[in-house]
Amino acid sequence: MYGCKAFTLDSSCSSTILKMAKFTGSIALLSLGYLVHARDIRFPPASGVSEQISFGTLDKIDVSTGSSFAGLTTYANLPYVHCLGGENENIEKYDIAILGAPFDTGVTARPGARFGPEGIRRGSRRIVADSAWSIYTGKNAFLDWAKIVDCGDAPLTFLDNTVALQQLDASHQIVSGRSARSGKDRVPRIITLGGDHTTTLSALRSTYQHWGAVSVIHFDSHIDTWDPKVLGGGISHYAGVNHGTFLHIAHEEGLIRNSSMHAGIRAPVMRPKGDLRNDIRCGFKMIKARHIDQFGVSGVIGEIKDRVAGSKVYISVDIDVLDPAFAPATGTAEVGGWTTRELLTILDGLSGLHVVGADVVVEVAPIYDNPGESTVLAAAEVVHSLIGLMVDEPVKAKD
Image 1 (cartoon, rainbow, N blue to C red):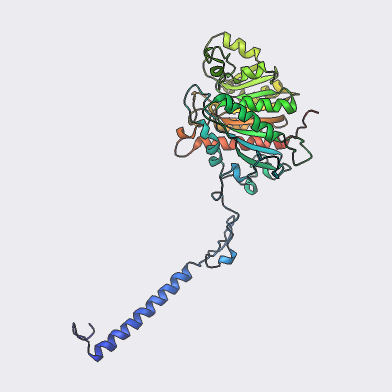
Image 2: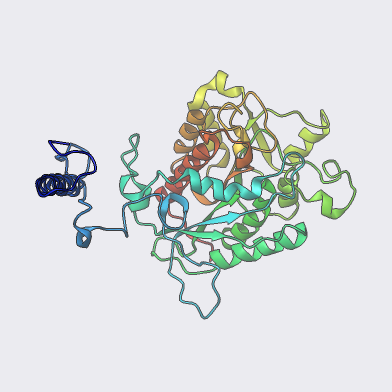
């Protein structure tokens, strides 16, 4: 070893080894210094990309803002407000509230929609208020006049449908019963994240208290106006309240007007004439899914607007209005539906309507989604569109 014999430790060898150790140590220190310094490398700012923060300056690091994947997952990274808080709590005021309804025991096919609110919020993580300017309209609903918050989920039991719907009724009453933040709306409006479609009944009861009977625009592949004696089989009153009868029940309770509209219908009915006659009796006209091939998107928009003109409107969107190619994660999928782009274009075309409430993308069952999460991404964007409709047109409650 550089003139030293193996296993010898004379003075000349010791000196050589010491020199080598000093040299090696110097290299190590230089390397360490380089590595420490390398961590502080900062790339020059590029157009559209914010300047990188150096990890070496801890006093300048911001961990409070800027990430869509930190903290609690709310819809579109909106602030969370405990809207269901007690009387002694100081609740922040809001104009539009996102409320989850984790309920799926009213379905007749695949369950799983109780996880829908969570999935929709997950699909919305890429939406951030400061970066939500529409390329189509140039508007940003999150930075307009309305204070928009996420109220979390209503606490619903999964052991008793009757009790669960009573809990949801009470949750809607509390959330909509608070004073709105702005002077444009006296009553906050609610967008409900389903949950199966049975949950719409509670939402319609809530809107009736503040705005009276409404015209329902119902985006779905199924009519959902079945007589409980038909869908439920007359087994019991309990069985008759489900995701296919809620609009029939809403009609019986006087919650909806005879100027309501289905859009995207394509599923078969149980009685060839009786179900359609009952649907008309419940106040609905129908746009079938294939009508979009005949009349186009603009024709669909025009027919919906003409039908509900002059009335307060409630919009209900079942995710199965979309074709399973675009939204596979649902309980009762029906082929031959609309594309995500068609639905979003139709929704944006409804601007100017007095939308007093919405349940958005009910029947989302994330367990059936694909790895790309196409269903929850679509659902989140539908919520975004409906927020835009509410912001575009403030609505005063009845006196």
